[in-house]
Length: 133
Length: 392
Image (tube, rainbow over all chains, first blue to last red; front, side):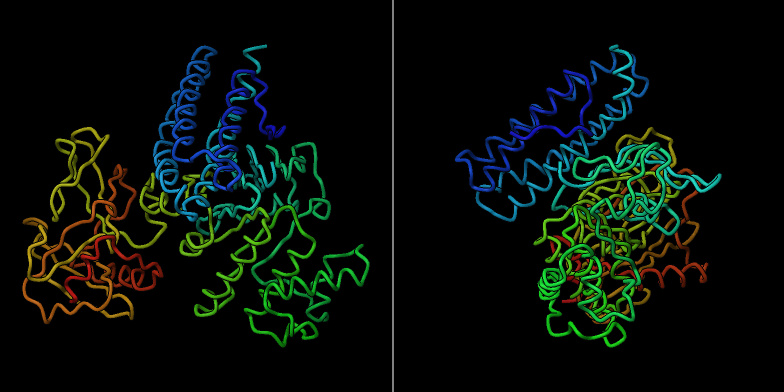
């Protein structure tokens, strides 16, 4: 199973665990697209999106608890991901039958996890680490 | 993770802050385009990733190896990157194969030539290994530069306006070939361009950089084009018809009818931006639109541009520019009506800095805006094909 890269570590157990779980779920979807798993994208992807939304809620609660000053800005960032999540679900609904949708889904998932979720979270890594110390 | 990870990169030249806390990820096998106007800092970001500038703040990681922080600077030659510049930077005194093997210093000569020959074959230049750069067309030189950049199997490929030196006809085919080669190689690629069409064609993800060096939006071409999150991003993709108004009951009145203004307070000044292809024309039959008078029309091959006059209010007439798929012959039609495609119509706050709508009595503005419209390379067919109705 793939591990999170060092540059993506938040050094916050709850958030790193969530990111790791998301990565594992996405790895599984990619394996389905590549024909290495008998599951269906159409089943796995909504579960991943559900988990991502739970992660956003957990994260916003944590940021509020530690008094992160830009919590509203980060919550707005989560809201702005709605459109990307809709696109991911649309592609997943087609991916089992349409290879082009599968390839687009793989690309969208990589960016969704690394660029939209984890990299954006790194903005408050230092703050959360300081507060939890 | 394979690829490039930049976090919190900031850079200034003296007092001039050119990049402000830029973060981005380019996963292995993916292509990210930095799109923005001249002077927005996109080439500086590329140079930071390459190691040609010293990073002042933030971090840069390539394939899990940190190559730059405020305290660390791994030199370019140790970053395993491939670079391709706008002018290709081929060595004029070296022939094609020697240009390609140049990047393979330290590799035994026979092996280096075998690798170079393979790369040149990949870009369809296997027959020109002995030619010198001055004997090649711009497109061929571009392909040599691509082969040279890929020869050492870089972890990251950095492309700075790679197609800007090519003429329009050659650009399309070279772009397609380059994309095929990059996807085949599986390398993470960061490309800089100021050309929206190029970014939409090449990128898995586009990052829009605004003046001041911050990322304004990040997404695939569909998201950026159909869901721009601010006026700057919307206008970056070409001419916009602009209507200013005041929000009332969460709507803004336009000559085409009321447009929803979600998230705006009543009484707030707003501007409605409509792409030229977002105004749908119909001849004869009623498409639910408003009657319009066609001012002029120009056939530009596979599409036409037209200007329309619509009575704005008692203060005058407003002109709109429309792009119509195929030929548009209003002189052979009766009544023409126009409606707006809601997917190509955007409402933003009017902070007073945006240009106003073109008015009939301002011929200078009209002429420059028409020029802009005519020079816009984008041609997006509408989804329901109704813009073609008037021409058929």
